[in-house]
Image (tube, rainbow, N blue to C red; front, side, top):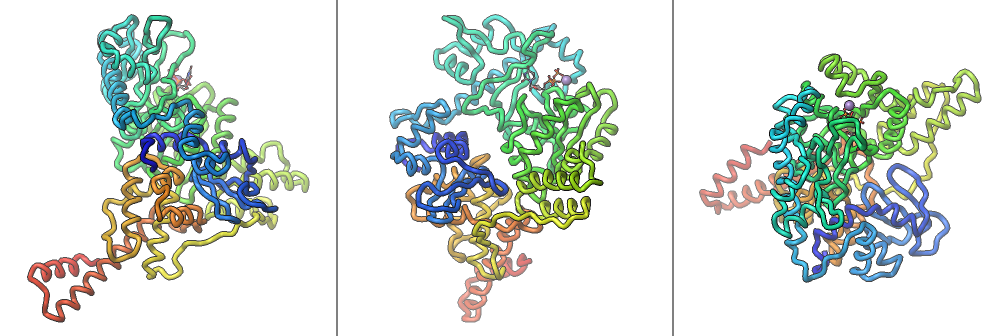
Length: 566
Ligand code: UTP
Ligand code: MN
């Protein structure tokens, strides 16, 4: 990353900018397959669209001229800006000012904001015991002591207790304002959440990043949330996910619900694998970030019209990103019930029965499309097939997509094929799995395209034997340190470095979707490399041993290697 603008800031900007929207405003894009958008390349003359923009990777690439990069690169090349100007433009779009060299990196590290949020959560939590009315409300909602503690539920008192307690210095007060807890009206400061029950919102790692606050009567708005800050984006967080991850080593299934209270009640009743969106529609970001924790995601909706609409919207959001290894289900609740009321009324077992019996994505899709269509007529059948293909075409290539097509063929007894205009697809799958450098190349492609995979690797690959392992390990480390990283942001770390071009080409390569899932494919490649490296060491030592030049320490090492070989 360039040295004068702190890299934390570049990361922040790249994570918050949507590359598709940025480019679309300048070069109208059209949706094509899966996650990718296309246009005629703005950087060279052409008649067919070979310029592709990936939403999930936050990265563009032209198959014609090789132009590529992230949001910063695009502005540099398209608007002909210099690096700092491009960053400036992007920062402005998300309402931030670029910190200049005078601002120290420390000031940017947001640590003080995390601390402030944590102190505020503790403050509110303690206040709950001081406020009989608030405590009574919590009790009346049937929330247990244990849940109050686990979720650090709290109460924001009226008056200026918060300011008196946490905002004594000018600096502290500023931090309270920056996190959106403290608002200012004329010369007076007031607690945004005053007289509300507080639900602290933690990020995946358990750091408090914002709050939701509920009134205790029928006044409006019922819930108030923290404003979006650099630390808090509603479309990124899921309420309760941290707690769910804390109590479950494995999350075979994850339930997405709509309300704070829903999440909490389910948890209290022993359904500890739910998380709630924050009053906004489910985003691809939220769903995608779950792929590494679970293999089944169940969306929970009210059975009313609003719920049906929300479900249909969620379906559109997830179609382009459905991976083969994750199963999706849609659960519709009876009228006038939400998970909170339902689990309290019928208990864990009955509720879980609903979950396991919920419609799968394909059932939900096909059934919804079937509404009002008469399959016994040619006309109806044609409309049905077209409507279904219109959705299926958005799915990434893979087993699931093929299965849906097969299903559609059988349902309609029609021979259907989805003609997708093919891009120049390059498969990076190693031809022979024994070829070392292609294994590394393959693992590296996967890692660059799905940086979250890094979380599953515990140790770097021993370097020096397979070319490129140092680079692989370097990227592994970067990706492990950041919680969620897009390809475009990852490549920002290599701006102006010699590896950049190679990495960019790996970033755009179309990977044939692995049969047994991304993760096992990735770990499998790494495992093979480790085995090869070990075999190489053993071979070298045996050669040395044959010459009789092995020290006793080396002999011991060789023994160890051979013992643990498999
Ligand atoms: P609901 O209105 O369904 O609330 O909103 P709820 O979760 O059932 O809460 P209780 O049971 O009445 O206490 C669902 C979610 O929508 C967001 C909140 O995140 C809430 O949990 N919401 C709702 C808001 O952000 N603002 C509002 O005014 C209402
Ligand atoms: Mn409710």
